[in-house]
Length: 455
Image (cartoon, rainbow, N blue to C red; front, side, top):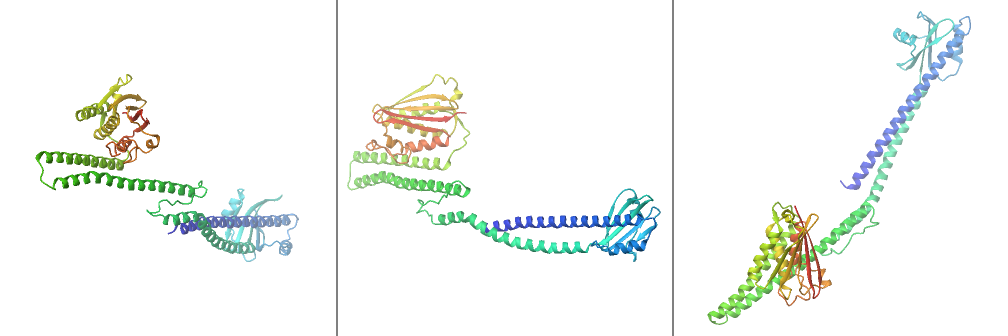
């Protein structure tokens, strides 16, 4: 069922409940008021009859009956019976004996209660009147023909009003829901025009303040993220293909040249060593690409293993120094870090080693003296690790893009590298709920600050 139809039916149901409830209340209160008014007139008539009857010393029943019949009072089939304390009927206009006299009702009235009840077509009221002579019970009965007719007309009117109101509620609900859903229909129509090749299109946000505007704004933000994501993915695939093709082309060319003629053992050895270097570079590149894919897909992770970040740095220093004798890695720990627990974090040891290794390698590779200074600091609930070098630095324009995969600064083109290191570091620190900040000046060096939450 469409939302418009559902809203219309809900509008109709709500309006119908209100109209039927209101009509029922009007009818019930009207019937009650009509009954009370009729009983009041009937009682007044009975009391007046009794007063006339007992106002003379001589009871003249025929005279009273004549007066009662000739007086217009709009009480149809009126019957009045007056009974004394001995249950003798002193006056009655009920010639046909249609009104039943019940002793228990008489006793209840003599106790001070007024009794009202229905007997067939008659409304009956029984009350007590005091005179100078005695207490008399008056039974008055009549048929409320006019009231019944008015109530019947009221029922017809209310039924017609309810039926017409429900029809109007349906029409109004259909028009109102259509008007209310018009902005959503416009959003849906616009969304249908958006495809993978037209992610640059945006949905009209209206005033941007109501729910529809906020929905459109949220959808536009999602489209913007999707467009950025697709663009990055496209660039990533293009750059990855280029980076993978370069060593493969080099390997293929060297092997083709090697096989063109017979060569000496030393020549084969030299060529194979060059091919091996290209294969190692290809393996390293593939591993980095896999790590980027892995860390990008995982998002923030709740790790369970506790790790000391200083041990990660010492181990990485030892491993890098073993293969790069000219690298100088200086590690200093702040005096405020007197408690070993301040350097404990929760995370993945291998991934953290990869991140630290990339930062150290970049700092040493792009510095003339191949030196990096690493410092520890504890700030609130974070351990701060600072990597400083005095290398070539990064320009302001390049600094905004260093975390994009395969992006390399303009002053690093002549140096070996793939532009994957810093994006990989950013992803690893991100899934550890940490922060990476870079500040740099061209020709003066670069400072990379890593903040990781401690236990």
